[in-house]
Image (tube, rainbow, N blue to C red; front, side, top):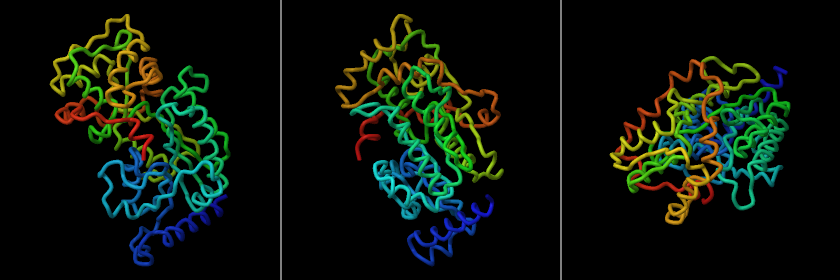
Length: 359
């Protein structure tokens, strides 16, 4: 009830004062309404921008991740990083994870696996998320915010989003006081090096004379800028001006631009000054295009675009569930961002394997 929630917040505030580095002096400098917040990957991509937003408001951030240094130098300052408390996201040690979650008011779960490699699967990732949600409930967490995917259903033929839908279903059913689900289909910004899909497409366009697309190139893609995504998560966590919001909330995390594949890659090509011919002849299947990228994988030691990625991008599912959401039109433009950062896009290749699977 309400009394339990107040008591939980008070315990979280006491924990803030105890665990922040700097002891009493740091505690005195904290916002009176400090809340303890856990983020899976607070020093990774989206998590850095969300962590910055929370820290600026005086909240305590617990980083659940093996990563102890930020993925990139912005937006977190060295002083910000020093305030973040890091604990490994050890799914196999539930007692430790439970102890870390105790005293947290909100858990932001952006955890997922990029590729189903090394014997792992997206279904297994969904099971790990379910276990995390159950621990959050046991620890007294009041709200969990999960990052799902647009158009995700449990019976989807695409394992990546079927797993996301399974995790979202587990969150709805776990019995938490409240929850929220954000539905992105892709994220871009803030810098070219953070935007793997767009950056690596630009890298190819700078180096090859021909850029072939699967099917007819008409599939649409509606990603969100990382800063807008962090702001949406902040709001869904109950930290916005409107307060906590509904006990159960689900929102699209999409930007205003939804270009076709041909429009997107032509925009990238133009922004980087590419002379490559970009074509969608209509007879190339996704498996054929994936096979054509294998020499790039051998050269870089990475996976440029696996079959699941390309199938999903060509599925028609990478657009908003609710395109009429008025918040979408107010967010940053993908195509404008591509124009702005064009000179920096694709100068260097960014490895997904190094980013997501090596520490």
